[in-house]
Image (cartoon, rainbow, N blue to C red; front, side):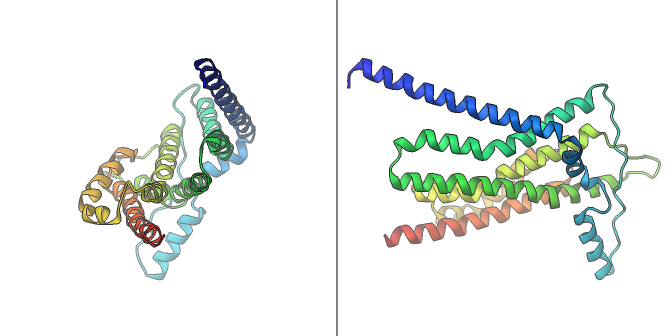
Length: 265
């Protein structure tokens, strides 16, 4: 192939990539606009953990009643806004975040379509599995944060007081930032088993190595949890780090099973 043909092929691939990026951005904008218009529906979901009738609080209340434990204080807090344009900006950021999550499957499809011509059939199979499982685990992380980690954290921090003379006044900006950061970070962290499977497939990681350095991994997990936790309390730190540790143990099992299948071939 001549240099001229190589240049033509390079610019052709670049044009395909540019078109794919344009389509992804366009779909993201469309979903963001739809989310922006559906303000009441979106914010009913987003603000649901601030309601005593939220399913997580009902489960905790039933658990405390069953085991005759002290019931946690109600969490129905009057959120406040302290910025003139803050509510509008939060509305926009929330719509863009929801639009990004909704557009992710199409974005992954476009990325896979761009990469697939240069992959072998086995590689395409692994990449398609990785993309599908990766997105599923990301959604699982968002649900885990929305239904468990954030509500329990919110309930603890709202009811915590250093003195009865100090009243907790939670701003909408603080509430939304904590919710969005936790959902995003936990969603990313939940990719650990999928990444471990992919690295095991290509021989970059072994279960014996992960088991041997388990203690080091726990320290790293605590550091990561401290970084991604929007609050600085030990309660939230443990609430975030424990699921990551469970995912790490699950990753060891996945890598071990992947090694066994690979050795049989």
